[in-house]
Every structure is written in C-alpha cells, then in structure tokens.
Image (cartoon, rainbow, N blue to C red; front, side, top):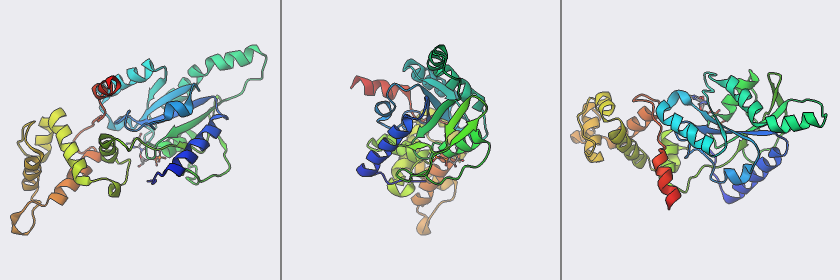
Length: 290
Ligand code: GDP
C-alpha cells in the first residue's frame, strides 16, 4: 500500500492516532529492522508522548543481526522496550506480550493497589506503511483481520482482538508518514520496498544500493554478479560490469542501464545478495551533533 501524504492527511492521521492512544495502555511502535531510523515517523515522540512504548523491530529475518543488536541498545537507551520480531513467520511473538506486561507493570500494580478489578492490557500498533502492521495483527489474532480501514482517514468501528489472556489489541493500526524529506531516507525506503517506485528516481536508488554494497560487502557483490570491482570503482563502471556479466545490452552493444538498475533494486529488496541494515548509528550521531 502506498499513500500520498499531504499536509491534510498528515494532520488527520495524527489526530486519529492521538484519539486511539486514549484507549490503550501501551503502544507497539513497529519499525523495519533494516532501517530502524528511516522507517520511523519523524513526529512519533510528540505523538506518543510518555505512553509506555514497545519498539518492535520487524522483518528481523531480512536484517543484519549485528547491526540490529546495536539498534536494540539505542532504543533501550531512549527508555523504550525493544523486541526483535519476524511477523511473516511468527518469530518471537510471545515476547511482544511479555514486553507489554513489563512496560505496563507499574500502572497495573497501581490499579491493583487501588482495588480495581484486573483487566487485560490494551495495546495498539503504530507505524509507517509497509512495516508489517497488518501482518502482525493477523499473526497475533491468529486469523485474517480485513484490511478495511487500514488507511489513514478511513474510519471504521474499532474492535479489540484478544491475544492470549493478558492482552487486547486494537484491530486498526495507527498509520503515520515516513521521513520523506531526507533524500537518503527516501532511497532506503525504496530499497526496502516501503515506497512506490514512481515517487523516487530509481537510478539514484540503485546507485545508493551499489555504493552501499561496495562499502559494506564488496566480496559478496563481486561474487553475486561475477564481477571484479573495487570499493572506489565509480558506479557507472560497476553498472557496466554488471550489465556485461548479465548480458544486459541494447542494440549496438550498449549497456541496458534501465534493466541493470531494476535488477540491482530487485536483488537488494528480495535479499538475493545478502541481509543488510541500511541505517547506521554513526550517521545518527552525526545528525545529533548538527
Ligand atoms: P502494513 O502496511 O504496515 O500493514 O504492512 P503489511 O503487513 O501489509 O506488510 C508489508 C509487506 O511486508 C508484506 O509483503 C508482508 O508479507 C511483509 N512482511 C511483514 N512482516 C514481515 C516480516 O517480519 N518478514 C518479512 N520477510 N516480511 C514481512
């Protein structure tokens, strides 16, 4: 699903999430483990405020686990409770309920001390499009919940889904916009399939992808395409090498760059080359210092 975000949509989406927040004890902020920074909504802290939060790093099956661990520490340091999950294959999902119990413990202890009747923890999922919100809801619900209303601005009657005995989840996730102002973020969102091809320059996305691989996994890049480039080989020469190696040529023996670009993006998106985490914590530190 791709949504064109306009200021009106953004304001409405934010209002809806703010309303839903009143109903819950805990928020599950869903991010893509391959881009734990780029797949977050830029205003998420202002929206969620101090509501207990569990950050779910989804699609762990596609990410670089070493880097993911660093990101877990990053979220812990911020005071959130991070959990690594794979919603598609149902991995680590029992941790989601446990995390919700931990972050709401104080509140529920207080309620118990006041003599209030015990009830299930109420939770909602929030995230940008395509991070896996519906997949996770369906997994937790152990059935298919219709995607109706899974669009900002489309309201429907909300219902609670029982997840085990201790948790109830709103069946409609909160959908917020990505950080599309940042050109690097846009390329990473595209490389992970979070945004539609027609709203980015695909050649720039492929150049970003190739340069990332040259810096981070040169050997695998060379092996995958049966080429022999260096870390500092200009991207045009890398494209040439891939085009030659794969026989992607036009009439007159020219390299078919369009096909090369599509191939690179498809291979990275579908994990054909390797599992990568594109957001690095170093970049974030530089940003914080600015
Ligand atoms: P939503 O827009 O946030 O509701 O995202 P969806 O639930 O529709 O998921 C977007 C895409 O990501 C779908 O193709 C899912 O199959 C895929 N997906 C969701 N979770 C995972 C995961 O943990 N691992 C992998 N590999 N794919 C996932």
